Length: 329
Image (tube, rainbow, N blue to C red):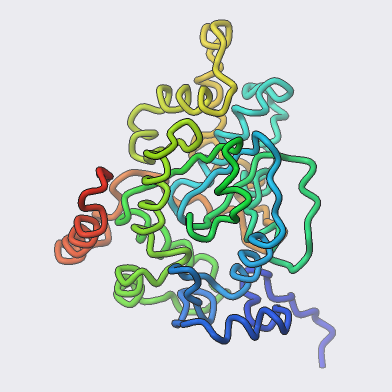
């Protein structure tokens, strides 16, 4: 036998076998379906989670204690999450780290490393993390699964980013295929499309996910900011100014005159981030290659993949789900 070392399985592919007996016993009671990447997705509180993420959800719900003025960036997967993390980090840290500085943390670290997910990174390994270093967090948790300690804390702020579900689906399909082991066949788009429409996707159904935070934002706009990916693309300066104001760090007149708004957008642009060496060849601690988080980052890419019948099915679902809510995508 040769002495060649076998590379360990990345954490994002470790599922049921990596869980405690208590968690395995609990998820065995839940409805499950075949996953897109993980072996199975489990339905908990109306939404679908891979086993390892679900372990993090349960631990986070039990143990996370927010501090006053914590900020939570929330989205469904592939809604522009990487971009939102980069912008929020740049805005909140622009005093010690001017966005024009060549040694800005975003030039050497992926946004997901700087703003990790509560349930995926901080709590998914079954340990209680030390969270004293930062009060900016991110999560894909739907509102029903958000720890009560966050949901009931009126001093915390929530920024929610939504995106057209058609683009979410296409991006998610490419993303999960990009995470598959080398030489593994890509998943069928038709099969993934049917599952997505039924709500069986990472943290799905995405329509219910959006609606939960949309309703919350209408009830308490001072605590919850609801952003649309398409509007951020259409008028980035206005949306970034609005976000900075909501986060409690508005741009000063001197910053406006000095072009700091433009510096933030340039630093956090798709072209700027995707071209960095750390995002071309680096990896997260969980094993994902940073490059998979950067594909196109555009509006309307679904037109290159979905036919009229598929698009119409999406539109019917959205019309039914959002009817009477005031939410229009």
